Length: 270
Image (tube, rainbow, N blue to C red; front, side, top):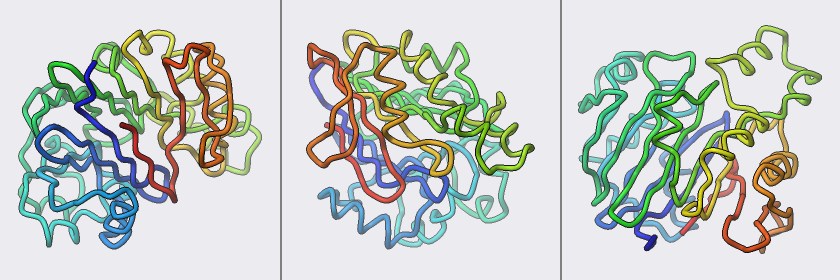
């Protein structure tokens, strides 16, 4: 594949989420769960000009994904897109001029074909996305308790795969969360565990896949080193420290890299 799509994760975790998908003719903001100030500051760290954002996509309505959207929209006149369920789920979202898309739709943004697919989370109508051009593809899926057939099909073969790996099952089971919250996180409408994501990589990672970005890691029930090690074992990768000292893994042939997005520092994948 010729790299035409790039991923910039500005924040990923339970305190706020925002990512930018860079296409051939502009930027698409996926979720806006951090303040405008933090959004602009982290974009500046990565050399991103957010005036090039042509559209905002929402995965779902939880506040850590939409909490900064209203203020962002005061300075934005591009297109807002989400499902009908998400647009109607919060009173302040109903005031915004969304273009409604289905959970199995395709449309064009920033020189990319965008495909939506349903995810499994305890909200109105959540979705993930596949972004593609003729020569490149990126799969984006967070906040889901399982991967259905449509999600697996949409994510398979992406060069960049941004996929939730929220918790270590043992850490969650023995941690401080109350029982009801443990059950929610681990349930079919909660969040993918490291083990679930590792199992999925056996299907999703193919010859075209170059980078797996573990998303939405729990600060209470996961660690980047634990996550990377679990995912690495699934694809025969070797754990090492990246240039910035953060854990990552690579297959012996150098074809595939595994890394983690974080709550407090931005990340770019070219």
